[in-house]
Length: 421
Ligand code: EPU
Image (cartoon, rainbow, N blue to C red):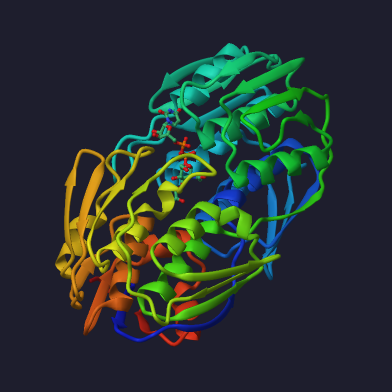
């Protein structure tokens, strides 16, 4: 397990390109199952979660090549519809193969994902919708075992807006018989990216980008090529890295519209921001961080995947702020570690009360999950002295060579490889 050693307190400055979005890729890869033949996914990020999905696709028989961020996936060769525990336990998004396998082959056996690092993350909405569409579903030895002659279009109304359930049911419905209407569908840009990919394949989908998707099932889809959108969470994390160190940054290859809630909050906190097509410029050289409350919500609201990073940012603000997570009530594993770096934060229910301190001080801290680790990275960049972040494999799941990107901005960050820490 690698660790990072960061010498903090350096002002970060520079220009970077934003990588492709992890959560878009994790939906686009399994969508290729729907169209037998060779699909091409461009701008795919080189991340451990993407490698896990590639392994899963190879396990079921797909032939996958990955070079220079271009993935070529041949799905005509799929022979096996089982997603085993070894893959699913590494990454919950593996459950995305359920809808495509079931709708294309009439059967699927997918390990049920357990809880995750910060609490339960059920998939009841995925299963209830598939049942309504005519799937027979059993739970056998920890596996979801389903079959169907052909799924049929139905009215699906989700009680909660769920990215994963929307993606899964969207993929299932494009080959179903008849019309499916998904109400309270997720409108996250990664779902829009997926829907546009499916339309290019020949799917009939209306309402893309809204919370009502209407899908007319077709008999066949053809393999095509798609560009993966930019990772708005990587972009947001890099913007805070510059802001928290009184630096400045220019981000390229990213549509600012993907990050509007994050940019508004950064401006409220005192950052100067300019945007143009596919570019965001942030200047925090004279920033005194203002205390700004945040409450996470579904897109276009402030994303839960930026909550931990915002908490780190606010730990150096000039007053108190409240950071509330309305998507995942328990997603606060970063707080005790930020406190080890000198932050003053307490958590009550789903809200962190962050009392800004004058400075953070380097310490040894432990990554617990992806975004928690990102918050420790940000705090370590701002802290006086040396911070060691243990278990950076969490960061490798979702940030492509983050230490190289930060070094390009001037950070003093080193990866110590492969020892047990
Ligand atoms: N939920 C249910 N039942 C379900 C599905 C979801 O109760 O069947 C609840 C969840 O417990 C949660 C809410 O609905 O309270 C929203 O969860 P959602 O299904 O939208 O989350 P997800 O699809 O499992 C994706 C991202 C997460 C991100 C969330 C929320 C991927 C691969 N993962 O997860 O990303 O936090 O949406 O935006 O797209 C990350 O990148 O660090 C990450 C965790």
